[in-house]
Each structure stands twice: as C-alpha cells, then as structure tokens.
Amino acid sequence: MVFTKKQKIAALSVISNTTLIILKTVVGILSGSVSIISEAIHSSMDLVAAIIAYISVSISEKPADERHPYGHGKIENISGVIEGLLIFLAAGLIIMAAVKKLFHPMPIEETLIGAAVMLFSAAVNTIVAHFLYKTAREEDSVALEADALHLKTDVYTSLGIAAGLLAIKVTGLYILDPLIAICVAMLIIKEAWYLCSVAFSPLLDARLNSEEEQPLKDVLEHLTKEKNFEIKYLKTRKSGSLKFADFHLLLTPETTIREGNIIAQTIRDELQRISPSFHVHINLEMRGSVIPSSNENIQNTEDV
Image (cartoon, rainbow, N blue to C red):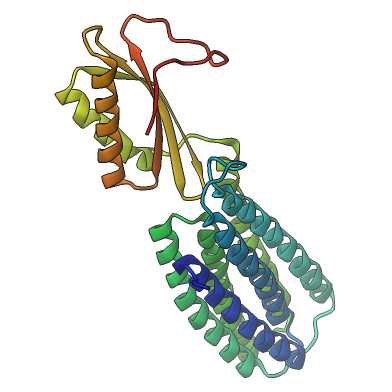
C-alpha cells in the first residue's frame, strides 16, 4: 500500500500526540497539577483530531466516481468541523476541573519535572505543526490545517503551563495552577471558533476568497485582452482541495461554436498550468442571447 504525503504527515501527528498524552498523564497524576492534566485532556482531543484528519485525507484522495462526481474533498471540511467541536468539549472539561481546584487549591509536587515535560511537548508540537502547516499549504488540505491549529495552540498552552509551574515553585501560590488551566481553556475556545468557521464555510458552497480566485481571474483577464469575448455570471466554490468555477462565455455573433470551444480549451489549458486544482464549467453564449434561468437546460455547454 502506497501512502500519500498527506497520509504520512497525518500519521506523524497521531504518533506524536500518543507519546505526549502518555507523558502528560503520568506527570499530571504524579504532580497533582490540574493544568498538566488539562493539557493531557487537550492532547487527547488532539489525538482524536489527528486520527480523524488521517481518515479524512485518506478518503479525500479518492477520485471522483459516478456517485460523487465532484470528488470526496468535502470530507476534510466535515472533519474540520468535528475537530472544532472536540476542541470545545476539551475546553469545557478543563474549565470544570479548574473551577473545582480554584475553590480547593492543593499543593503541587514535581513542578520542575512538570515544567520540563511541558517544554518538551512544546518543542515536539512546534516541529510537527510546522510540517503539518507546510503540507496543508502545499496540498490545500483543511484537515491538516485543522490538525496543525490544534498543535499550535498546544504549543502556547504548554509554554504557559511551564511558566506557571515555575512561578508556583518560586512563589508557592498553588492557586496559579487552576487559573492557568482556565486561561488555557480560553485559548482553546478561541481556536475552536476559528476552526469551525473556516471548515464550515465550504460546506455551504461559499464563494472562494479573492486569493483563491485570483489564478482564474488572471487567466480570464489575459485572454479577454487578446480575444473578443466577455465573462458573465462567474460562480466559484470549493470541495476539499479542489476548486470549482462556472461562468458564461459571451461570444460575438461572428464567432463559431468551434472557435468558442477553442477559446474554452485555451482557458482550461492556461488554468491547469497555473492552478491544477481548478475545475471549470463554461457555458457558451452569443452576445444578445437570453440567458436561461437556473432550472432550464443550457445548450452549447463545454466542460473544462
């Protein structure tokens, strides 16, 4: 079985999260620190998210078929929403544990070991998140981006907890432990909100942002200067890493259908050269003709 680049980096995240969960859980129990235990809970959610990311990128790699003519890319958006909800759950569990200790502070043992584990966790997650973000940008994968966002927040919270444990060691103020845990939860909630908003939008077929649409607009702007045609009714959407667009190509009455098809083919070739993930549907129309409504069949249609 051949693993894709996305699958390999998702598997790396699963392995690293599993290792860190074991470390944090052991040290959290030995020290009695709710902030370390909260990080173990957070990492547990990270592990679930990493597994979901691995499964989703594996499914999204499947080519389009008769039942799924637009491919399987949206499974990554679904996994992103699920991961966001898991982060909300993790934040709730952390707050519950922290509030309990806020009213009943308890001494914390092994603060130096706890701080060392947190710093080690931050270092590991920084490295893994870097590779996740890099692959997410290269493959335009929302699932890997979501996983990277998990780990990025883990880095900040681990550093914060390490600093807090060292402060407790110096000051003896054990109440700092639950307060830090609550701050961790607030950061996690902010992360979850951002992730859900990014992942959910494509499920509603929201339009591509200006940066994503730019390759298509560049091709159309370049060709319209050379050839006598207009572009109307441009619509775009996204499914995983795949981008889809459809528009009307308005030709002059003197232009033949064959010439129109050549123009459409030129658009396809140029766009594939610049952005291979774009799939375009072009409706050939003559200027002055009536544009049919959305529930009518459009004649002279070229898929590119």
